[in-house]
Image 1 (spheres, rainbow, N blue to C red):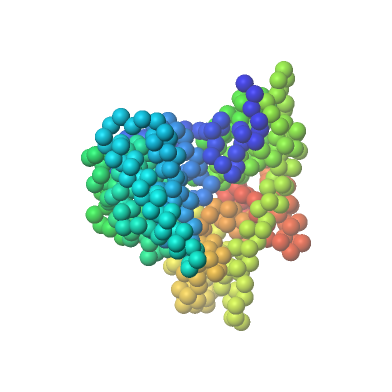
Image 2: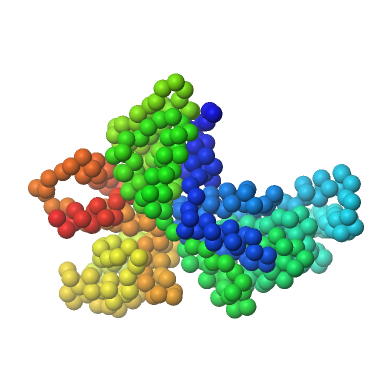
Length: 446
C-alpha cells in the first residue's frame, strides 16, 4: 500500500498510520467511553498524544462525534451554540429521509424549529451587536437530548482555556449529561486539557468527584517513541539505523509530536516523500542532523519568546532571580521540587539568597506575563517546568560539560545538537532542542 510521508509522520494532526496503542491509558479510556453516564477529562502535556489517542478510540467506538475547540474568552452560551450548529448535518439528513420513530420526529422537529428561531433572532439583532441569541428552549438538557438521539459524544478541546467564570457552568453541564444517561447511554462530554486541568472540573462541583473519569496521558516512554518510528518504517519502506532510533527516542523527551517532527524532517531531507517501492532507503546521521537543525529553526520563536519574558529584567535587583530559579529547578528532579528545595539549591552558589525573593517570583514564572515556563501542582505543592521543552532548554543552557572527557558516537551526536543550540544563542536567539535530560545530567557529573 502506498502512503504519503506527510500522512505517516504527522506532528500537527492526529496520527493514524503511525498510531501506537498505549496500554497505560488505553484501558482506562475505553472503559470510560463504554460506561454510561461517565464524563471524561483527558489531560497531560501538549504533544503527548492526547488528541491522537482520543481520535483513534472514538473512531473505533463511536459512529459520530462533534468537536468544539475552546479559546480564551469563549462563553458557555457560545459552546452550546457551537455544538448545536454542528448537529445540523445529522438533522438535515434525517429530515430528507423518513424518520420512522415518534421520538425522532419530535426531536427532529424541535431541532429545526429552534434552528429557525435562532436564525431569525440573529438577523434581527445583527444591526445592534453582531451576536446570536441563545433562545430559552436551547437548554443544556435540550442539547443533551439532541446529541443523545444521534448517539454522539461531544469533545471539548483545550477546555482549560475557558475563563474561570465559565468552568462552573461546564461542570454543571457534565452533570446534566450524566443524568440523561439513563435515556441516552452513549451521551457524554470528553474534555481535553493541559496538565492538572481535571481538578478544575471536579473542584467546581463536588458532586462530580466520582462521576468524572480523570485520565492522565503521561509522557511517552522511549519504547513507545521507538514504536512510532517502526510503524513509519513499515509504511514507507525506509530504515532508520538503531543509533538514530535511540537518539530520536531519547531526544523526543517523551513527546510524540517531537518524534513525528524529526522523522518527517529526516524523510524530507532524504527526499522520501511517499512509500518506496522495490528498494529500501537507509536514513543516515546526516539526515538526522539536518532534521534537528530544521526543528531548532522552527521552534526558535516560541522558545525565545517564553524565556525572554521569564528572564526580562523588570527592575534592578541584587540577584538575577529568574535565572537562578530556572537553573536550580533544572538541576532538581524533573517531577518538580518544593520551594524549600529550590531555595536550598540556589544557596549552594548564593549562600545568602533570601527566600522572600523566591516566594515572590516563583508564582510569577507560572503566569503568561513571565512566559509561563513553570507550573505549580496545587495538590503536591511542587513547582516544575510547564513543558518538557523548557526543562530541556534549561539543562542545555546551564548544565556545563567539562572538557577532556572521551566521546562515543552518541555523545558526539549530542554535542552536534548542543553546537546548533550554542551557535544560535551566540547570535542572540534562545532556541531549543530537546536535549536528553539524563544525558546532560550525566555529563554534568563527569
